Length: 514
Image (cartoon, rainbow, N blue to C red; front, side):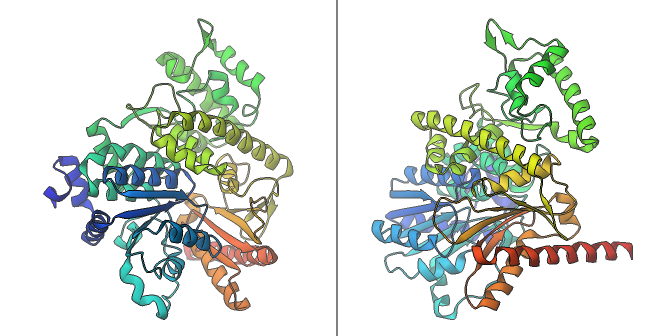
């Protein structure tokens, strides 16, 4: 094992810590890749999916294989046909799926594994599996699929390792020199919020950080966790703050200027804007203290200020004072590309393409404006309260960012956290009859028994069985899940989900009282 993967002690510890069953699948995936001649890879469009794909692209480049890649919004009954067509045109003997695939394994088996020239399929995912039974007609094709997912090996796909982390394990299995990709693995995990808003990584993620630190690709410091500490002029650090959202400061340029003026902190030096990283330690401390008091006053919740300071992961090999210098800013940049329907730009940014970086910065500006606008709209138009959930039905917010918006809305208490929040978006880029629905639940609700993935899948199964056709496709994690629903059945899905979640919360509460 030690000789097969990497001689460095940190790399040895990583692979020694993995369950043997997962390690065997990684070896199998490595052998299949070494053997292949022509490879095609598909991945999700968020920061984790983009990072995972960039890791795979770079690793396959090092193997000198003929290769093609593409990001896909999601694998469902419609997109699987597009994926199949792409594969039939390129004719690879190996197909790789990253950051999705587990929840859609039957679609992959039924549409991709049946293609004659595809010898092997590798799925590198971290999402929870579906409970669907394998179709008997296609079970014989399962030998074609190598599925690597921490969920099958007593590891958490929500906390221990993300899709890009699984891709990294695959990459360093191919070659120890791919250790440089540790930075992208943590960028992806950061984008998937696996560090719990600066509280720190655990499990495989923590091991990857140790590897990246030892190799000089990652550095961990304690600092302000806001987006933009490397790049934003001081007033704009607060004006565009959305995590947390700061009522009275976010979107209010004059108030942000006043904030720093009252502290006596110069915002410019030699006619150039100062950034957070350029402040003296005493200046940083003054700002942090005032922010803590401000947040406690606004939210009347001291816990809300706890996430202001945390582990900030820096990428010392990336250019200073750029969005690629910290994992959080990098992941947000990649999310901006994906959510603005240009995930390919994100992949190219990861790979160092200078033109892509310029385009990505423009997309980032668009992304932040869209989020801030959606949050202000939500503050004005409010949300609907249902028995077991809060509903945000916003036809103006694109389906690509509705999940981010509702998550930020609960994080900043625009929407309460005592029940899950579900966002519905009909603002799609296609004429599909499917509507995108996203759900988010606070960590303490998970401890009370809420599991959004289980909820969405269970309700979807009931409805699909009732109508004897596919009207709901769902998946995700306990804290964050999504579904594609036929527009004629959205109201019914929401009603059933509300009842299901209400019953879960009541059952858990009554059990606690006993």
